[in-house]
Length: 139
Image (tube, rainbow, N blue to C red):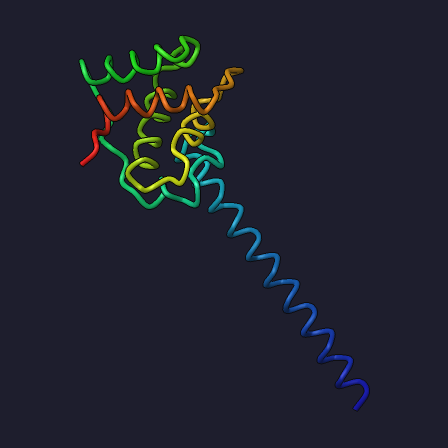
């Protein structure tokens, strides 16, 4: 009887360990997939996943792209050194705005704080104002 109890306990512990390890692997690969799909600047600025639940606007081209970049340039010229990164951050910010982010100005400040640039909530407010005029008007 004692051997059976010990065996059952050992098997239970091993089962939990094996299941726990395989779950961690799955979460890591899912996290890597999500990280590669979303710019690193978006980080914790999603405010509860608002950007993940809302659709991203289409990538702007031509004059619309120029207008979005001009909006970002008005806040800080260092943010458009990598135009694709700036456009991706803008698209993600639109998703946060349309998804009901709890503090959209802070969200924008966090999302656009990259490449050694740190923005304030006031900067985020300016970005949101410009995005509402260009890439993601309120519906």
